[in-house]
Length: 218
Length: 218
DNA sequence: ATATATTTTTAGTCAAGTCTAAAAATTAAT
DNA sequence: ATTAATTTTTAGACTTGACTAAAAATATAT
Ligand SMILES: [Mn+2]
Ligand SMILES: [Mn+2]
Ligand SMILES: [Mn+2]
Ligand SMILES: [Mn+2]
Image (cartoon, rainbow over all chains, first blue to last red; front, side, top):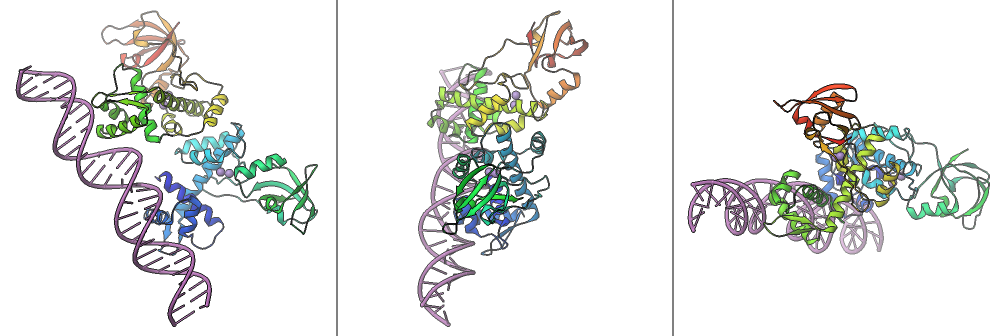
């Protein structure tokens, strides 16, 4: 059994490994968990003892298969709870993360299986992130940052990169939500801003926004 | 903000105060929480610092109004989650307690309000225990132990005293569930066992069982 | 290649929560 | 009213997870 802290470390390493081929550095973990590098070193030794990470001094850390499974399961729980909060309890997508951070540590296999079923076996959370299955596998869909699309290309908005509540609330204000069709009308070379058509409405968005929105090309 | 441990102590004291007029003893709390008296003394001092209990050395402890409110809210969460597990996730009444022990510590006012609403503002949990409202008030219904009813009296089964999973599974096996009508057909002086009619079925039950079942008299 | 900067680890400390063993206070029994 | 038994508190220690400051290792720059 793993403590709340251990689970959070495993999850952090899991997320960091998704876009990093080498071993994960002490500092990277410390930054992600908003803690100190010395604390990370301590914990990483303990996780290594428990055989959920491989750790060589000064060389960074990688998850073992067991570690990966445990981390994926925490992520699975986090995302299923987020779906629950949005679909059943009328939370908006910018309100769910902090509560899910707590709920992801509840221990009960039956609870999570039944929740999954109750929600109709969702494949993605409210931010478009994939939900790992019971074995920790996640099927990623083909998606591109809106900023990488060319003029006249179009697709469906399927996710966000930054899921801070500030960004999500901004999207709400602009009427940008998952599932909507977006077409690039024009790209401005000067500041890389975009003129887009969202459903049937015209909108100008900055490059910063376009770099945080995922589109599944049509 | 209160830690998980502090919440568990407050809840234990809350439950103990329900049937005890004097101050709650260190030992009683230790037994309820399956911990040592010395640990209780330490924690009780801390709770006293935080003004959620009144504590005088060797004199036991009582909850302050603030302490009562916090404890009642934990109980509210515990029982609402139990309802959720049974009504929405198909748990049986003997499976919910341990998971609810974890869920009761999740911190989010919105979560619990929405859950309450989602469940249709239930007044009682799956074991017949009342659910405190947002202010910590609970309306107790008139109920009597089955063992105290006289021959030919009848009523509805509305709760259990012992809610261990062993007892609950025993009741399941005998077909005794909340909401069913029970009539006393006969009482055996020799061993205080009862012959009862449950709905339209005849059943013999021991005094031990009858002392753990609550009936709302017809 | 050597010096400088950065990263990582170690060493020592701390708070929360628990424990055991011993001392002190209270309660019960003679 | 003493003595004996029980309950409660204190004292000291341990574990987890964090921190600061200093030392050691690695990476970068001249
Ligand atoms: Mn989240
Ligand atoms: Mn998410
Ligand atoms: Mn319960
Ligand atoms: Mn209950």
